[in-house]
Length: 251
Image (cartoon, rainbow, N blue to C red):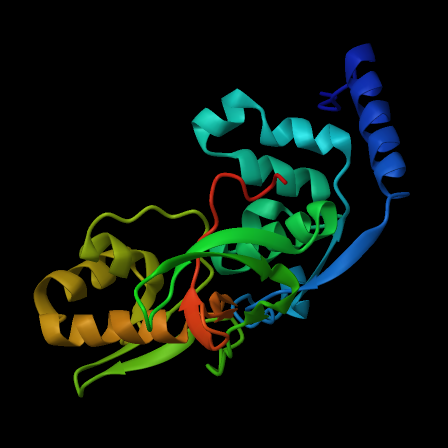
């Protein structure tokens, strides 16, 4: 029996259209983005282990993605934008959350420039001031953890457990501490089964040790450092974090 699937006329048209679009997009200027994780959170055999991704500049067509109400309602605007902009042969769904923010940041810089107005609180005077951030000055946080070949990291819990955890998290939503721990922990004392991890969290992981582990995860996570040096009201400077608003991709 012949199991070969024949392509219909519409399939052929769609393939040709995709090839044409890819060819046209390849003519646009592109940049190579260094990932905050340096690729260390991915298995050594993974394309992202190189620590770099190539992405092209935005066009007016890509702006339609940012205003697509359906994408906005579903919370997938940036997913769709990255699908359109990433040139490297990689499934954007495999890009960890800690690295995605760097790609979005670079898309904004290459498209609309690096100046971004913010409201920030002067930590010395308590006053809210209006300033402009130069996004090009943002740096990746120093990442010093050493991974194994799977891009996972080891953590010892006092004297009763050895964990392996990952930073390769993909759009995971966690509302409880148990969900948070289950998302990050990949192995407990050599056992990678979900049941072993669940039982450990439920019956063995002491609250004080869980708190220390969560702090360790957050303190050592790769990503962008949003602590920025601003000019104060009287000519001095102060360092404060800032957040992106809904206007991040607009003038």
